[in-house]
Length: 390
Image (cartoon, rainbow, N blue to C red; front, top):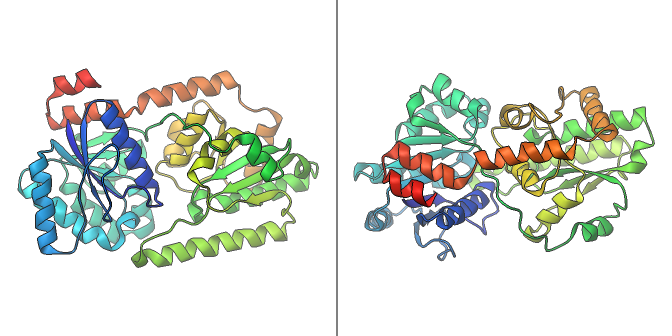
């Protein structure tokens, strides 16, 4: 299958950029041909030629549509999140409409439909109804997202494909776990890792309040546990600056709560994590904590799965679909409930064999090669060849 991915790509600091780069490399490895249209101008990637970038220029848009047509894709796959494109949303949909008018099939991967609809209300519902109507296939990662599309946005169920966020092998750690532990003074402490971009829906405040309750119950916990907050606020396009500022305000408020509770020696804020340290942090952690208050899917969960790191998560959205059947989850996110969940994990971590079996099943179910096969079947594109290479 020939696929044009429309997405931001690294070095953009955006989860969808990382997702797309890995997906494109996996498609290529499975024998599919991939090209890209990027959010910002950039050179070709190792795994795909870049046909162009989103532009406000009518002549530039016309040239981009021609470049896509000349490449003769079986489908254009748009990796979509409202905040990801910011002011380039209009050029994005102008490109999509132009491609549809000349007969190009569209796969639309919604990364945050449930979150956006819940957060932005009626404008988001109108927006998602319109853009989803442009798609041949709408791809989402969770059953909850599918229910939002079908039950709330009236997207026909037969056009919706549900497949979890892919799990990829972890790259070798450039900075080993032992070095990270030494650098941050973690010694033999039990490391609770909250990883990735900081924002209100990741539950950092709830985790800090629960940890404070646990330390109040048992002061010795403060000497044996460290919460590592490995990440910073996500940079956003200028048009979405108020969301970035809200995240900065949230992080500042959490830091204040850490100080108020006397948890300064227990909580470590690392700031932005370079790519070469990501694997090392998951190997250094005893548990990846995902107390999310709202979640459609989580790339952080997939990093933990790839590293074999146990997860202690809330059961919101896609997290419940992934973990609640096999692994312990927080009963709720009130401070006492978070403290109870942490205490249970510290007293008895899940059996490594159970964790391994759970993660193996999730990895098999989310294979990018399987996604390409399912898309080719939905699109009616050279199914036999696609199945052979997948």
